[in-house]
Length: 530
Image 1 (cartoon, rainbow, N blue to C red):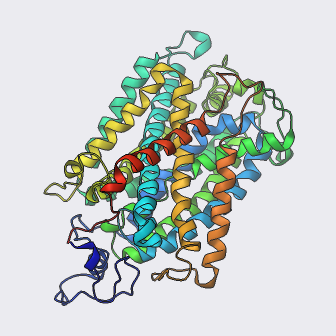
Image 2: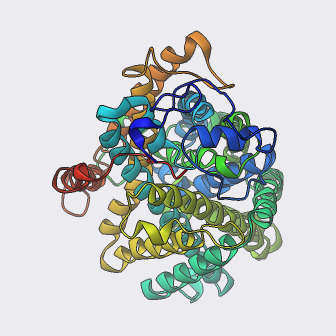
Image 3: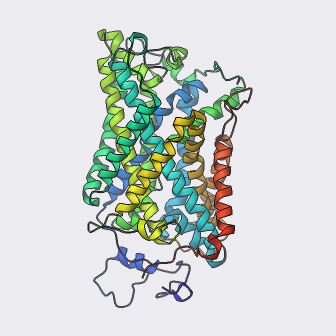
């Protein structure tokens, strides 16, 4: 396709024009396929996802059971109940604002490329290729890091379940080595790769099952754990107690509070999945945006309920955080275990409850790989990834099969850093949040600056409030980028340094250098395949 002459029925070369049918298509092509053609692409993936399927996949990636369970220790350490209970709605509302801005752009450009495609079109021909390159690599590396982090978290939880099932840390329970953990991580990724190789109709079913599991699981645990626990916290403790007792040398109350927000913000990632799935979603310019917004909004409500229910069963923060308890310092696991052990004399019920969480994390990783593979497929389709011709191929079931296994392989390689040191692994994982949010903010920033007057919205739009909401979203991402870079312990040493800015800065340097040395000569942004 000649990029300089790609205007189709009023669509300019940046894809910003109005929605008109392509000549010759007649009534054969759906409105979705027509719009995708206008944006420069032919329909290659199977378009079978409904609105609820699109929402379900994104909701299961956000997965409050996954995010809160795996980072609850952070919340307890930095501020405790007050930070978690009141920080959650603050972060939730600000995340919804970011989601609203992304949803508006998604409605205008419903393609699997998502963020990097948006950046290219919003910046125009001059800056578009660089903006697309920068956004795309932050997005795809961030997504791979998310999948690696989720599946490694599941391996860790399985290890804790085995530990408790064999007697607990204080009674000779089995503690897996780092090599066993990485082997479990590889096995989980293998299962996710197999599931994601299935047709999208089956994957849609798993996605809806995942969403239902997350909602039902939360409410079962919220009711069951406080009800079983013999000792429960008071409402005053849950809503007002501020924990300043930490071993990290941090005593400033405000600093402790903002560090505690990390738990909340880490949970709210991956909602760009609805955009990555738009080429497989019916009425994509409406259902894609609604998938983003509804997944965030419902997660805010469900997640707050989960936090409240579990925190009412917390009575001794320091004991829960101690590496000498039966769960080895895994706070929520110890909460579940103690609740049943105190009432029935054994913690079997708590272990079963951890199994409910483990299934939710499994679904979360599954959906994350679905989103990864679609992003890798689209980015390869536009020639940005080495061996692009391999990764953007689809099989006879219209599944980007090679991109699925690429995502599994890269996520596994990222987790291998855990064999070297926990510091290296944590630096890699930091890209999952910081890198992703930079990718979220870039197209929004271009929307409110370079494309402020030229942007043509789709069916879902914010009207006159689009610019204001966009600027608030960009400001919030700037704030949390600083938050994720703050030192989390004093004095600062090689072991206590927060390597997040180092990892993200290193990724930025690699992206810029690869652009200057090579990509600027051949990468032209989204190129279309019609």
